Length: 352
Image 1 (spheres, rainbow, N blue to C red):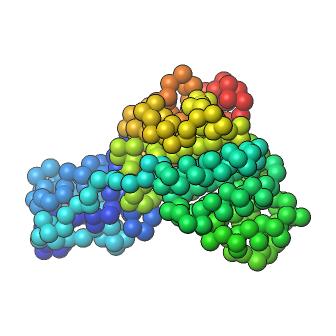
Image 2: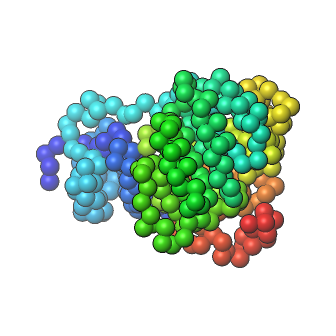
Image 3: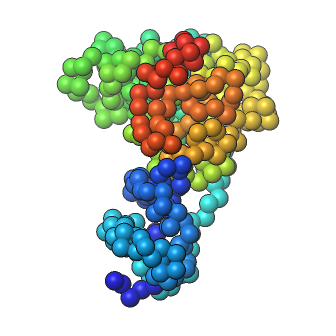
């Protein structure tokens, strides 16, 4: 046994307690470790205190098991022993973002060039940092080119583009990816299985076989979509992990929190986008945290999970669990949400 008194997790390794299990979120390496809830409780209670003494006083019967767990955590570089725990402060949990709108989703296919210009000007004024452009059936290269040309001198950091796989359009897509440095990634969806053999002149272009022919394909909650990062973790403490500082415009020009949501705050052709984005009514969903959502509040993955308010288990309750999540935190099990008989009626309601 070590001669040092206190076992302490590294500041970027955060414990989250669930109903049955707990997790340690390594926000530096981007990994999640599932652990027993009892261990999560122990680690949460044991911060700057004398660990050796604490085990003797309250966990003597489980001493061997706990020390084995602590040895495992140390081997994974998640924690360490020290005699000076006060010299290792916790992370600052404050999340700040100066932008009025941080990210946006634009369904660009049917939008007019005039409305695209209006959207781009508004996003620049709102200091938007990230934009996702979606095309479901037509690769609207000319419109994407026009949109991106509005950000040559801008605070915008990245543009991600979703396009349907059209082999005859590949030369134009390659040219587009090389023309604009702010285009970080172009994803060609609905590709054939053998499309992975294609080679592109740009490393920004990727293909996926998944069909994305309409907006109902979003909102899926899966472990491979977890975002295990310090900003995401801290943002989730007080804000919605999907909708916070997001602005969306659907294919009809309707301004929404998300293209898949039903509520519209007006059409880009008729209203001032900046005023809408700064209104209290538009921002009301930004404060829906996982701690206020049914079932999610008891989930050990709630700090790194993407949320969805567009498709929920109970369409009449905005604080209902995401429909497309198959995890049960009370059993600690994942299942196929689309085959859950309890979700059948809701799936039909959303016409998914």
